[in-house]
Each structure stands twice: as C-alpha cells, then as structure tokens.
Amino acid sequence: MNCTMSNVCRDLRFYLRLLHIMGLMCWHFDSDHCRLVTTSRSEGYAFAYAGCILVSTTACFIFGVLQPSRFHIAIYNRTGNFYEAVIFRSTCLVLFLIYLILYVRRHRHRDLVQLLLRLNRRCLSTCTDQQFLHNIILYGVLTILCFGNYLHGYTRAGLAPVPLALYMLVYIYTFLVLCLLLIFFVSLKQVMTAGLIHYNQQLRQGDLVSGLRGRQQILKVCGGELNECFGILMLPIVALVLLMAPSGPFFLISTVLEGKFGSDECLFMLMTSSTWDTPWMIMLVLMLRTNGISEEANKTAKILAKVPRTGTGLDRMIEKFLLKNIRQQPILTAYGFFTLDKSTLFKLFTAIFTYMVILVQFKEMENSTKSINKF
Image (tube, rainbow, N blue to C red; front, side, top):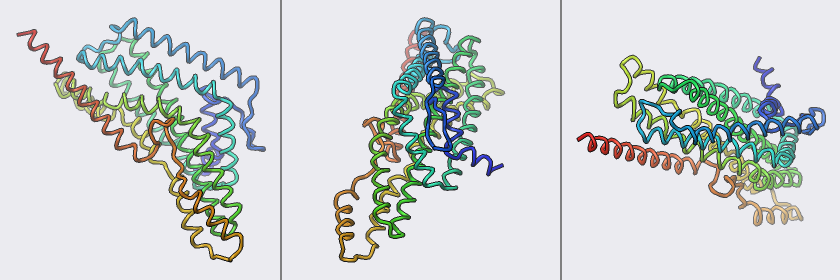
C-alpha cells in the first residue's frame, strides 16, 4: 500500500488533482511528456470556479459587515467578538485575493510547475516520493483536527445555526485551500533540493560542466520564478495565520479561565482552545523550516574545493565560478517583505505574543470599564 501511495504522489499527481478539484490550478498532466496541458474545458472550469469563490467570499464579507450581531458570541467579551469579526472578514478577503491572483497568473504558475515537474522526473528519487506522501498525510490529519476544533468550539460557544454554518464553511475551506498551497510550495522546494543533490553528485563524479549548469538553472528559478509566483501567495497566507494565531489562547483566557463553562465542559474547551491554531502553526512552521535548497547550494563550494587541479581551462572555470557565483544565496521571500526561512519563525512568534498581550490589555480595560459603570 505504501508503494501504491508513493506512485500516486510521484510527479506530485495527487497534489495536482486536489489543486484542480479546488479550482486553484486547473491543468491536465500529460505523464508521457511530463507537461501540463491547458484545455478549453479546464479554462472554463477555472473561470467558473474562481468566479463562484469571488462572489461567495464577497457575499460572506458583506453579510459579516451588515449583520455583525448575528455573529455575536454571548459568552465572549466585546473585545473577543470584535476580534472574531476581524478574523472572519480577513479570511474572506485573503481567500478572494488568493483565487484572484492564481487565476490572473495561472499561465505563469503552469510554466513554473511544469519546469519543476521535469526536474523532478530527471532527478527521480524515492526519498522525495516519501516526502510528498508524508506531506499529504500530515495535511489530512491536520484538516481533521481543524474541523473537530471548529465544530466543537463554535457549537459550545452557542452560535446560531446560520453563523455557525458560515464559520465552518469559510474557515474549513480556507484551511483546505491555503494549507494545500503551503504543502505544495514545500513539495516544490523539496524537488529543487533533490535537483541540487543530483547535480552535486554529478560534481563529485567529475561532470563539472553539467553539474554547474544544472545548479545555476535551479538557483535562477529559485530566485526568480519561484519567488515571483509563490512569494505573492505566501504574503497574505502568513499574514492571516499571524492574525489568527492568538485567537485560541485569547478565547482560553477570556472564557475558560474565567469560569464561563461548567466543570464538565471546561476540560474539553481547554483542550479545544489549546489546539485551536495548532494546525495552522504546524503548516506554517513546516513551510518555513523546509530550506534544503540553501544547505545543498552551500555544499557546492566544498565539493569544488576538493576537485584536483589539472592546470587546464577547467581550473579557471572553477575559480571563476567560486569568485562570482558561490556567494549567491538562494533566498525565498514573501514578495520581498520577509524571508521564508527559519530566521522568520522567531519574529513571527514574537509578533504573535505581542498581539496576545495587546488583546489581553483591551480585555482588562473592558472589564475595568464595566466594573466602574456598575459601581
């Protein structure tokens, strides 16, 4: 069964099917020629699906603005309800932007993914197939956890059926879409890492011209098209996760720790609040920590340093490469705003903690105002 699943994940076929079903990247994969084909039917499907999502997210956003009282959570304080309203509207906005960007730039994304699929075919590795499989399993497990948290949390919070249905639909679908894009981005980075490993192996075997040419092509794609296509997608995704991250702990502080639930529900709500944003954070950490491209790119200098000098033009080529190109680091960014690597994790957690402190301060101010008014 494991071998069968690996074959399904080979060439990222399972990812491409999911992306097509959700109307994100609607192409037909030609396995024989390893290319992505756009047909009139797929173009129509992409247009209709994107239009449906754009209309639906706009309608949800407008409904949330015009009917804020429908989303009111009785056991929550005013600060918490305002925060929930901001998260819901921001989620609708991010989903709108993601589909708009992907549809407008769909041909550019197709060319990039096709290029990396061919790279994956040339540097075929059982290791990368296993990585693709592990990514999709993690995606499925976290989706189930996210669904359970949202269903239990909002049901116990006493939401009416209509806002409950909207919250579940918008949040679960957003998780499915955004996290699928995150793991697809991670998988593409793993393909590039496998390509660098392949070309570094060629350098070790003495095939310097082919190895260096292949390495430079990968780094050019990494610093160019991969940044351009996925950097602009990562920016709203990371911003939304950053906005949502304090919601679980803040709900825990505002309701569970203040005794607004009975003893029977307290333990379940404690568990739900504690793991509320865990699926989002795991996906974000996975995306930022997967940085094998830089590690493999830096190994090239060590490999070339061990190549015996022959006194020919090959030596000059190696020295020229080391002087001009070896210091070029493949840096992935969210459209230039911040780097997509481990160094950003500390900054993100610091920002989340800061937002958490601000929310708690607003809650305390609200409680103080209520006490003064009662007095």
